[in-house]
Image (tube, rainbow, N blue to C red; front, side, top):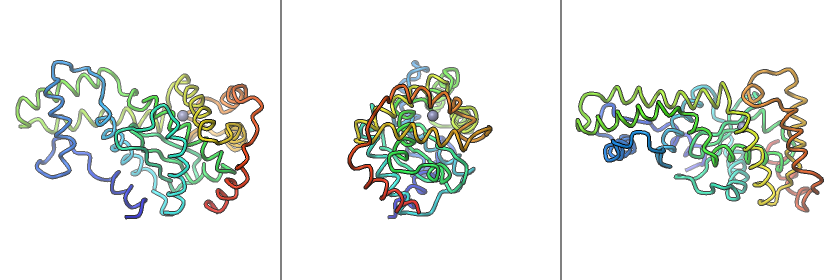
Length: 285
Ligand SMILES: [Zn+2]
């Protein structure tokens, strides 16, 4: 199956918690609920990687109700190859179902990391990049958010406690009657994450950590970390006065630029940079 078609299927598959019972789509949610039952007394336990994945998939579906998925399979494949290259060098190379990268068909300059490893980049941001190393810088920053679990951590502790307590009660009733309540509880969690990554943004600290993680991933993967400086400078020029998209959810680009510049120092472009840039131009033209 084509990778973009597969991704659409993966993301758009229903995230069913409770609901109208008995179909294959309910298996993941049932698994979560059963797990919740056995741990009902630990209502506020940390989320597992598989739970994070299912919440992330629902967040991705919500993003795809706001943006259109780009339909160029070659570009999607290329973005996945570059993304996988940096993800393998991250502090979390193997989330529950791996990393998946997709392109959103919009001129807005933006990128989103859903919990668990589904990462979106917009066409507008790809066009702001002028080389593969710059594209890798964007993807490495988003992988940094996944590795640090910033998305899933934006769900409030109170909300999780509520969800797990309800799961325990639900399992005790053998899934009878209160399924609707469970759905609404999970929807709240998904709302928390969606609002954070699309509307409000993470904390300044989380962004600085993701930028630092990106520089490490780029260096380890053989990309030029200075590409991030060039990209942030281009974003600053494009985003002057903008208060939407990535400029709304991230600290001022000038501040990010100053910090990244200080960390990168005088790095030299690696030997393959020219070939990679040519490849980037071919794939994105
Ligand atoms: Zn970020």
